[in-house]
Amino acid sequence: MHRLILFDIDGTLLTADGAGKRAFHAGLRRVFGPVPELPGYSFAGRTDPQIARDLLRAAGCLDAEIEAGLPELFRIYVEHLEEEVRRVDVHPLPGIFPLLERIEAAGEHTVLGLLTGNVVGGARIKLQAAGIDPERFRVGAFGSDHADRPELPAVAVARAEALTGHHYRGKEVVIIGDTPLDVACGEHLGVRTIAVATGVHGLEELEACGPDHLFADLADTERVWEAIRAG
Image 1: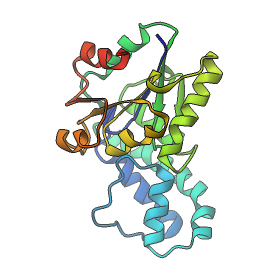
Image 2 (image 1 turned 30 degrees about the horizontal axis):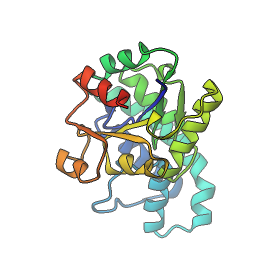
Image 3 (image 1 turned 90 degrees about the vertical axis):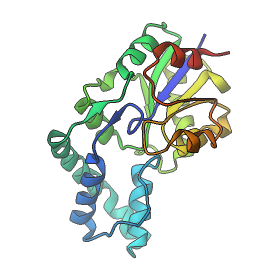
Image 4 (image 1 turned 45 degrees about the horizontal axis):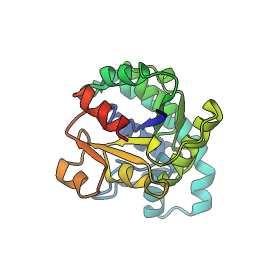
């Protein structure tokens, strides 16, 4: 049984008590000046570059200015994030450690990975703050790889194939996330999707997106594992 299991981070593996958003806005201010928040705009499920472009375009910045400033924005964002996570309670969500252990115990044909809108540096800081070793994840696709989240599953699959030599097809790829965008991002690849209501989206909203499996949280390790390995 081959499985490539790709976890989202925020709202799925952990909660960071708003640290990422505060650090992001601090970075925006330092690089671009005052950037107002967009009413009703949610960071959930979006990549860091997409969020930056959305907010900055709404503030009247030109695309050339935005692209020129993004590297400095993300450098400063990571600096602020390191400070923010020391001030707040960043912790893993229910059942995460037992589930990761169950997946790792399944053998060499099961690959644990990340699929997240976070840039690489931000992902590592959040995971470490929650006590989750980033090195547990053998592959990953990040916001720093592509601004469009639907492009990230193919990035993760290509990296897993380079690592293992196995060609992952359809439901051998499992995306676990807490937003409708997590469910949607792998649809064109025909992957298996597991939605979990530990973020800002409730069970009814997630169910309407049509995931293969839906859980209130990931605390029931064996039920989640059966969903991952289902034929």
